[in-house]
Image (cartoon, rainbow, N blue to C red; front, side):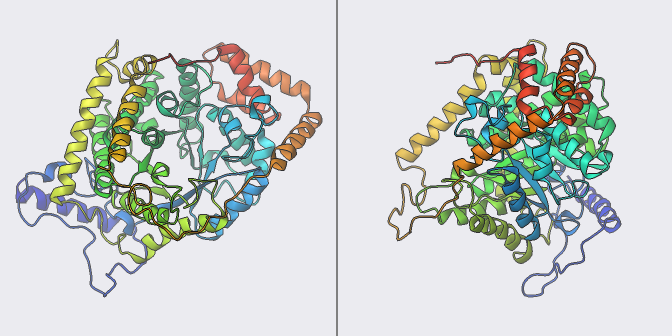
Length: 555
């Protein structure tokens, strides 16, 4: 790109920057020196067409001309444990301490669409997240937290749609304007088959529910993001950075194809897709991954799927620091790891961020550890100066080379997935890859290679295979009492006895009748949630109708 083109780009950026709202804050260095909002090349640079200016296609340098001068990332701490009342108290602590939004962690029975009194839930209730059995639990979970004013993310995929319906019912009962709700539902079923394994049915009925949800939100709740395409769990399962990026974006393309198959306008529904990435410990590789992700998504959305609006080409993403990088040995070191990973996410332009607590490798976070994790983000935001300049590492020879390489690696993986497709669609390749265990094998191979490198000492983890001597003392960790499960089951039994059982039965019957047609299922499921049908009853009725699913054996 010659210098005239670069200067023309800078002029366009300046116009957007001047027209944008900026925060009233000090954007000088610690020593008081003025810094520019963005920096570009001092001379002609052939790479610059791929890099560009912030807020302009291909969005390598970020979606907004102002970067964090306009709006800092949202501090969205992931939390949930025990029952709804206990988690509500933790949410109020997070919000009072400066958190900008909520992110709900559910326990294993909820993630699998089971009630707390299901025999298969024994010993798991409230242990890795909050137990939610019906809309009444959602009422308690968000008591005193106005849902009409709070962005809420819910990390759940298999039973995401009934949980979403219970969230809507709780908002209705608060008197909120449903049409104005803003939040994110994970709903990403592809990554469940690829990595996390928390599905309820075969892929096709899950995709039917997701299509219904996309239609419903586009029509009724335009600000709400019904899908958060998740690479986090893929990376945590052992994938490389390029695999995380490629598998996640391929899944996203699959959901775009689903929306198009429903006759939806890509410019209308694509802004409702968001992403969720892992930020691992290799600092520069992670920054490059985030920059490449925006560039790939914008190009594919424009050139392959026909998106013409800027918002439909934008890749907006939440980041969580890498849980898999935390160590039980010398756990105080995890504070350092989390800070480095959080900084990488910020330098990569994340839109919201969760920082892991130092004790999460052992248990759910204690209140003290949760506060340290929150303060980690606030130190980065308030003290380091990284909010002053958009994409401050843009133009670095190393960062740009890494960004190009990860992009090229991802494109090779896209080609492999499409080669498996019977109809040249990304969806066809994903479904075939799931059916044949291809994704699982690719991740397993990557995890095996890394584990061998650790065992040989070629890769290092401080406190594990390097610098293992320590004066540390045992941590006091959060323990969820078994009384939580007993109390939850008592509460569930009382609610069942107090509700209108005939109304529940009629709503569930109606839901299944709608499920046998092409009519949108969301309104009927909402009626079941309003009648206090439980999560297990709603998911059980659908399992009876659609059957369950077991992945193929692979050796």
